[in-house]
Image (cartoon, rainbow, N blue to C red):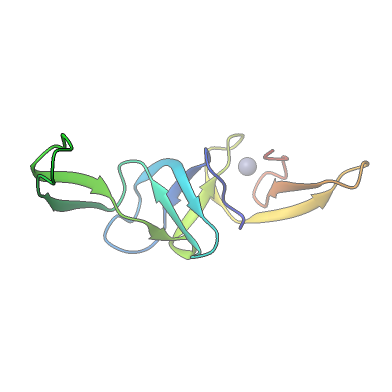
Length: 104
Ligand SMILES: [Zn+2]
């Protein structure tokens, strides 16, 4: 996946279009990411057993499809597509297609 935990992303389609947040969970198997403050859903939480859980309606983020977000380049601060570049040591780096800077 081109997007990793800790990346800043911008939503490019759907109800939260234009919203930005930090990826706090990447789910490569599902092709989804959880982005802080994006795609908030209300969940009805019931008290279960003896475990002390918060009851009532809680808000939490639902995963969004990775196709619906774009990586925000830390250099030019724009949502961008990601390219790859091979370094001298053979390691792959992500590159911003807009400004050409290496992202990580
Ligand atoms: Zn850039």
